[in-house]
Structures are given as C-alpha cells and as structure tokens.
Image (cartoon, rainbow, N blue to C red):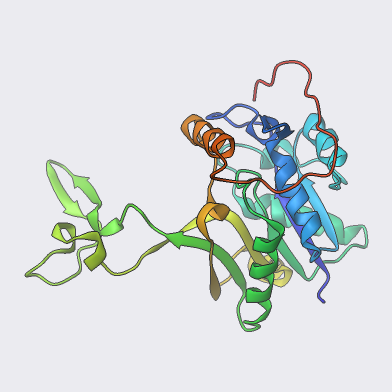
Length: 254
C-alpha cells in the first residue's frame, strides 16, 4: 500500500452558493459527507482539508479530518489554480516530515460520492501502474458536437469534424461519438507529477466512470435545490456520517 493522502479543498469564498462547503445538507455541513467517505474508504493514511478559514477548519476537525495549517489567501481566490494549493500542501507536509506518494482530490461539492466509489477508483488507479493520474468522468449530456462559437455575425461549429453528408450538429445524439466530461467527484495522482512537472494530472490519465449520483456536483442554487429534492424523495442517498451534527451559529456569508 502506497503512502497516500486525501486532499479536500474547502475555501470560504463561494459566490454562487455562499458558504456551500459548510452549508447544512440533510443535517450536516456538506463537507462532512466527503470527509466521512474518505475516512470510511480505508485507503488513505491521512485525510486533510485545505482551507483559508478558521471556521471551516474547526468544522472539518469535528468530522475527523486534519487541518494542519491554513491555505494562504493568495491561493484561495475564485480563479486560483488547483496546482498552487496542492503544491503548497504537499510541500508543507513534506517539510514537516510527512511525505506522501499518492494524493487524491475529493471536492466537497460531490456529497454523494461513497466509500465504495473511492475504493473502486483506487483499484482502477493501481491496476494501471503506468499512468500519471486518474480522473472521474461521465458521459456528457450536452454534446460538444452541437455547440457553436460566434465569430462576428457567424456561427461556427465547435467540432468541425464528421461526415460532410451528415454534419454532427445535425445528427441525433445516439449517432454521435461518445464524449465524456470530467466531474468533481475525485482525482488520484502520483505526488511526483506535482513535484517534477507542476501539474495535478500529468500526461497519461486513466478514466474512472462514475455511476449515477456519484458524480453529481453542487455548484449553484438549482443544483442545491435538486440535491435536497433527491434526498427527500429517497432517489439519492448520502454517505453515513458517524459524528453528531455540527450546529453552525450565525450567518454564513460566503
């Protein structure tokens, strides 16, 4: 078993759903379900939350995650690339004597990801030892062959390929080549690619196809409403969280 760490990014500055990482979802802060799945999967030597917020850090610790240090504010903006905070986290951990060979990114916005999801991805990654990383994907519902770009007053197809007698943009979805879109459920990678290439993906990536709700990503208000409806109707189930619910006090303003 390789020395591995789960990295859970949970900055405070969400705009579309203010405070979404610690906003209550079915009794617990949304972040709690990702922490619970990571811990219950049994594949990680450490589960660490990366945050710029003392409040989030306190809640993360309540649910069993480590927060050994806060993320610098410069790495917690709306457009901050993942490589910045991942590199900072792995380097800071290594400087303290904690060297990890493998890391996994588990984003709190995918609360329906289960311990079994993580274990299946883990097995897929290690069944393919020549790859740099693994990334969760799902079959796209909005096919890029039917997407366009605008140049002046003209529409041009985003994917100008396919047979001339039957352009893809005029074809049925079922007739189009399968295309997959990444989701936020999980990524797994060798730490060496961060150190040697300053990338979180590398060049050789194995796909991990998520099933049903595993890849559901909560990024806006409508996503949140749909998630609550699916939970209430029993159409989706959240991972079990063993801790008592954290009671957030005061107003979460993002």
